Each structure stands twice: as C-alpha cells, then as structure tokens.
Length: 368
Ligand code: AOF
Ligand code: ZN
Image 1 (spheres, rainbow, N blue to C red):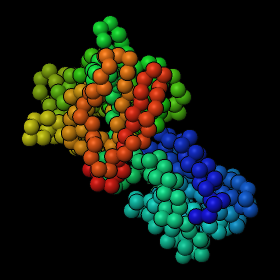
Image 2: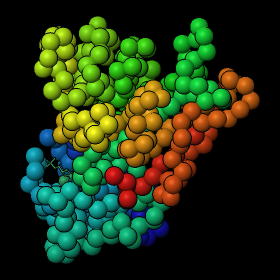
Image 3: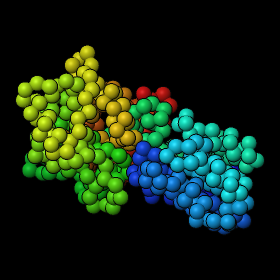
C-alpha cells in the first residue's frame, strides 16, 4: 500500500457507510476510481438486485476509468449473481490497479483478486493495506461476514442501566438515559436489519422499535423472541414485517392457534425454532433462522433475562452499554455479567449528554 492509497480508501469506506443498512443481504461496499491523482468516479452498492459499488463508480467515470486505480472496500466479485461480475466490468473499463480492504468469503462470489491478476491488473489486498483500515472495513461488513462465515447474524447487545445496575427506570420515569443516548440508539437502529427484543419487553414497554429522530432510508424489521406467543395483537410492533421467533409447534393448539392467526392477520410472520433440552428456545437456531430471512445485523435491546440468555449462549458480538451515572447512587455495577474473555476489546468509551457510553466488541474469529 502506498501513502497516496490511504485517502481514497477512507473515502470508499465513507461511501459504504452512507448506504449501510440499505443493501441487505448484500454487503454495503464503497468504490473510488482515481486516475493521475484525481477522483474520476465513485459509488456505493445499490439496494439488493441493483448495481455493485464498482459498477456505479465505473458508470460515473465513463472513459476516464481507463488507466485508473479502483479502491474498493470489498474484493470485487467474480461471479454472475443477481448482477454480472465486477471483475469483468473493471477489466473491460481498463482499470490497471485494484486496492481492496477485505477478501470476499462468499464462495460463489470469491476469487476476484485471482481473476484480476490473471488479466494483468495489479491487486493490493487486505494483507498489504493498513491493519487499521482493514479492521474498520471488517467492522463495517460485520453483518455480511457473520452470515457468510457463521450462518447467523452479527449481534449487538444494547443495555441502558443506572449506576447501581438497574435496567428499569426509577418510579414514575419512562427513561433511564437522556435524549443524546436515546438518539444514539436510533442511529444504531438505522444501520442494522433488525431490532430484537423479548415478548416481556413488548408487554411492559410497548416499544415501536423503529428509527425516529435520525434519518433512515430503510426501517429495520422488528423481531420479538416470543417462545409462548404472548405478544399482544395490539402491540405497536405488530405490523407487517414483524418476525416472531417462537417455539416450534407451540401455535398448533387451542388458544395459541387463535393468537397465531390474529398475529399473522396483522402482518406478523412466525419463525418457529426448536427448544433446547432445558425447555427454553434455542436462540442460536433462532438467529440462524433470521439469517434465512435476509437479516445480517441485529441490534438487540432486550430485558435482563434475554440479555443474559444471549450472553450465556455466546451469541453476542458487541455490547453497547449506556450508563446513567447520575441515577442509582455512586456505585458502578454492571447490570449483567459482561464478556471479558480474550478476543474482546474496547471499541469506544465516551459520553452521550450526561450518560456514559461503553462499547466493546470481539472479532468474528472464534465466535460462534
Ligand atoms: C462487489 N461489489 O458492491 C458488493 C458485492 O447477487 P449479486 O450479483 O448482487 O452478488 C451478491 C454478492 O456479491 C454478495 O453476496 C457478495 O459476495 C458480493 N457483494 N461485491 O463486487 C459490491 N455488494
Ligand atoms: Zn460485484
């Protein structure tokens, strides 16, 4: 990687960020074409079925792509999927060099670097670029990479707690954290495919689980883990697009069947999964089933029980902890046992208004 490669790659990352959450299950990719030090075209992945980032950038550049270097966040695809191979388009346009930050692990699409090199294009891959940039792109593509490598979505767990570890607001208060932290939650929701809670949260808080207060091109799908189908039909999440993860066969009998019919009539879709030996829903199977519905990145905002179950089953990849340090005395007790094992690292510590934000994540290696 040359010194002058850094700025266009950062720009490609920024372009990809602008479309994050709008391309699922396709990854959000950015591409910048540079010739003689000038940007001649750029673009990002269109919604699924539409053009890939490279093609958008090539169209913008026209004949100026000849002799250019392409900076792409993901290795260009080498397959006929819903769209033709980007490798063919880059070669035909006369691009002479391709710098990409992440290999495409999706077997049908993989192999772009080999194809490009065989056609005489110079390829600079993830091993040769700055680890910081490679790491940034891995985090940006975490939903796609998670589904391809593990068959389940990437899971971010959000918890809002008081200083003494309570997850519910003090008497008479609706919120634990302030407006800045709540806006941050909506920014998170805007980047994922699904917002997940348990049916207990639906019954106690009746959340909407949509993106408000910040712009959203595509709304995430609401997902409720509801083993015994106890989501009330008039809850605000019961709308077209809702996925209810429930115990297989539970709705065949009597009153459950009626509830199922009513929920489905309101637009909900049931995702039936088996229960484990402990009689509780197999959450790993539930997440895998969500991937089959095109969900790659999940933002979970559960109550204590579901949070502990997700952590206990090792199904959490990031924790976003909002702490209202002004509530609950002077202590600093985590509400749940947070992951501390190897592979976990600090992503961010900072503030949101009066609240503290503490964010940790782990890489995809080694995680189930
Ligand atoms: C790229 N550039 O912008 C994206 C890529 O069915 P298709 O044709 O849309 O191909 C989908 C696959 O292509 C997807 O699973 C991933 O491997 C890759 N995505 N590739 O060259 C892009 N979004
Ligand atoms: Zn492509």
